[in-house]
Amino acid sequence: MERQVRAGAARAGSQPVLQLSPERLGRRDGPTAPAHHQPRRQWQAAEVILNESLGYGTYSFTVSSPIGDLDPNVVLGLFTWSDDPAYHHREIDVEFARWGFAGGPTNAQYVVQSNALAGSLQRFAQPPSAPSLHTFTWARRDVTFSSRAAANQSIAGWRYTGSGVSRPGGERTHINLWLDHGRAPVSGAAVEVVLSNFSFAR
Image 1 (cartoon, one colour):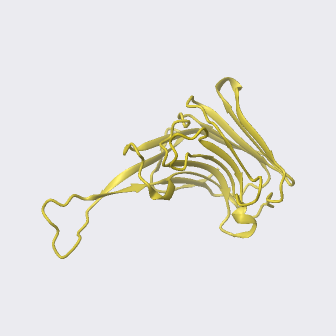
Image 2 (cartoon, helix red, strand yellow):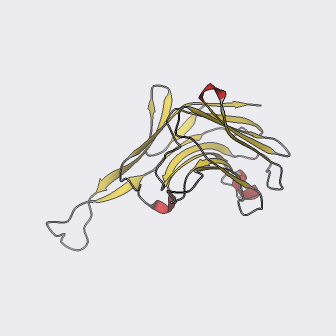
């Protein structure tokens, strides 16, 4: 399957690598910059986008990196998205994020957008072990999610049957690594996530 790679994404062998890292950019605050002025750091996110639209079926993502202990400001998204706003952009998400709350009991969620609809979001706790397999099966009347650890141990699962289930229509598969509200990682360190496989089955 062909894919687009945006800033901060690379390949290690056959494995997509998502890197969230700071770049140093020169900056001048006026006609002359003071001698002590330091270049500012701008964080660069990463995204991989599948070129083709897949529609109904099972989307499977194998993540080689431990993602249960991501920085509180970092978000890893595995999802479908269409630029057409119909059906809330046909967005179905598996997201790993604490949304800035380091001490929260959960660090991941399944979502069928819009999350403003009652019952369209399910939080869960992703352990720090790796690898892990995350899937969602998109059907006409429901979306079924599953997350499993090594040795096929269940982490979480959920079935959505609400009114938010969309019809296919130009959506593509995305994998991205980004910062919640643009806030830098609490640690200040670069973040890397490696995916060993993506597959799709009807």
